Length: 64
Image (cartoon, rainbow, N blue to C red; front, side):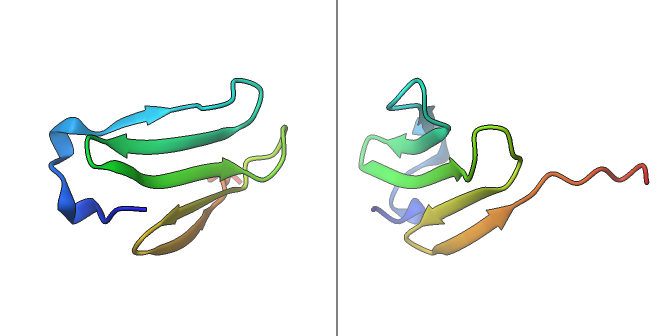
C-alpha cells in the first residue's frame, strides 16, 4: 500500500473490485492507498486500512 502523501488529492478515486462485497479501495495513479471494508452485509461497522494505520467506523444515531 502506498502512502497518501506520495500523491495529490486530485487523482484519488474509489473502486469496488467485487460488486457483491462491501469492500472498497481508495486508489490513485501511484496505486492502492487504502481499503474500506464493512464487517457484515447489513451492519454499519466498517474497518479502514492505510499505510498510516487502521481505523474502525460505526454509524451512530445521535437523536437518542
